[in-house]
Every structure is written in C-alpha cells, then in structure tokens.
Length: 300
Image (cartoon, rainbow, N blue to C red; front, side):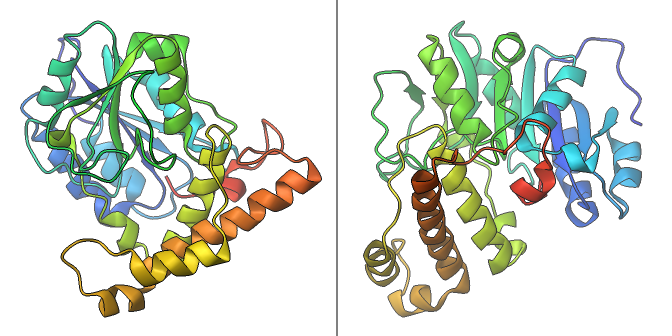
C-alpha cells in the first residue's frame, strides 16, 4: 500500500476493479499525479489477474467485494464507507484523467453548500455543446433520459452520500437515480465541461461488451426515469440518419460499435415491453441479495 500522509485527505477516489491489470496502472498514475493528491480506495470484485498486486502497490486501501454480491451501487457504497475525505470521487479503472487539476477544479465547486456532486459532460441533455458550467436543479429541463451524472468519473459530497447512499438494487444507472434523488432533496449537480473524462474504454472492450452495456443502461435508466422503448423503425432511422458531426456517414453506418449501441437500446426496449406485460420490475435485481454480477454484467 502507499504510505499515507498523517493529514486527513481532501479527496478520496473509489476505483472499482475486475481484472483491470492492463489499465489500472495508468489510471492510478493519473490520480497520484493530481495537484491535490487523493486517498485511493480500490473495490475489487473478484479479480484473477494482477489487479490486486497493482492495487497493493499504488492504492491506500483495498476492499474485496464477494463476486456474487457485486452491483454498481453496492461497490460504490462499500468504497465510500471506507473513504475518509469529505468529498468522494468515482473513477473507472479503465479511465485516465486527462488533466492534473481535475480533482482541484472539482473541489472548487463545493464552495457552494448546496452542491451534492460534480461531473464532466461535453454536451447538454439536448445534444448541444456544453461550453460553460451547468448547475442542474429541479427546474433544469432533461431532454434526454439517457443523459446525466455518470460514475465513470464523478464526485459527491460525503455527508450527502451518508444520508443518500447509492441504490444497490439497480443493474445500472445508480448514478442517474442518485442524482435525481438528491436534486429532488434540494441539492444541485454541477456539470463542468472541463471535468470531462473520455470514455475510450467503452470501445476498447469490444462491440459485444458495448452492446451489453447499452442494453443494461437503458433498463437501468427505465427503473428511475421515463424512458420510451426504442422501436424497430426508430432504431433503423437512428442508424441511417443520425451521425456525429464531422464524420463520414458510410463509415458510421458500418461501424460495429455504432450498431452495437443502437442494437442494445433496441433490445432493451423489447425487454421493457416484455417486463411491463408480465408486471415485472424493470432494471432492478429480482432480490436484494441476488447475483449482481450476473444481472449487471460483471464489469466495474
């Protein structure tokens, strides 16, 4: 373990891992090089590669979560319970923080007493570029229910988390549910484009993993937000006509990652309709103690 300073940390970072040895070293190096050095808490859910060896060298605390009990919310709650700082951060083990003052800049936003959490986003919920800080409140319109607070690289105030922990029963989107809940309690979430951390890991894991993630996230969002199931016509229309600016359409149509994302959303819509007909809950584990790894796909 890293030698910890005698001073209380200003920030704690929770990193969820599962066989993350190929990316964890770079992730932790980007955290230890921050202008404000954080306490690093690893929550591992059953790694069988060198992940725990890397964590033992570079992290301050390592918490091992039984694989069968994993959910995204539970891993974050376990990590937050072990963290010592007044502000907690969550960072995916596949991410590299792009700027050395990422933690420092985020902490500045907590000078406002009503800030519950911070996040980086390149766009607003309507898809337009986010060029300045957005303070999200109950009055801020949410044009896209699949947009919002993301725990692949986020932060939250510890005292708020103590009162409002993450929902451990969701198969995904525990971040959406938490942010909506604390905003309803009168807090705000700060979206700062300068805090954006690229999610290159989403493609690095391959099209099948991206398909499963997209499917899971739609179901998770539907558990806490009004998500309309994607129809076959809408799936084809999005594949054919909606492309990121500056791209060549034929290349985008042939991209297996684009197809995987759209297919995941479409099949999730079919699953939503099926669950609704059967009167089953959408996006939640069948039991609070069920096999979270199986339901959530097993990827921190």
